[in-house]
Length: 97
Image (cartoon, rainbow, N blue to C red; front, side):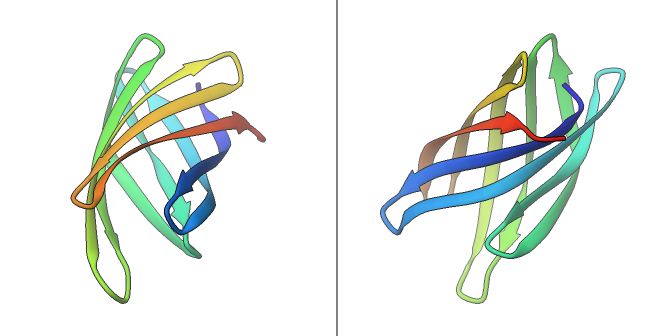
């Protein structure tokens, strides 16, 4: 599960790309999201088998976006459901490092 994943999602503003770094230590998950030119670290994640969960805040010039991420890693593919204060959406990605 550990590694760097390239993510994509379709939004009303078009396709957004980013990266997700996953680092596991037992059942604990840390790492970062890299979206919209900024990096957002997290250290409060949990792991259960191939599934993971973490939450945090993305601060933009216009608004703060609170998020909750639930995901699953199968082989080198990650599938994510993101719930935010601006709506919910799915992200998909593949391991790149």
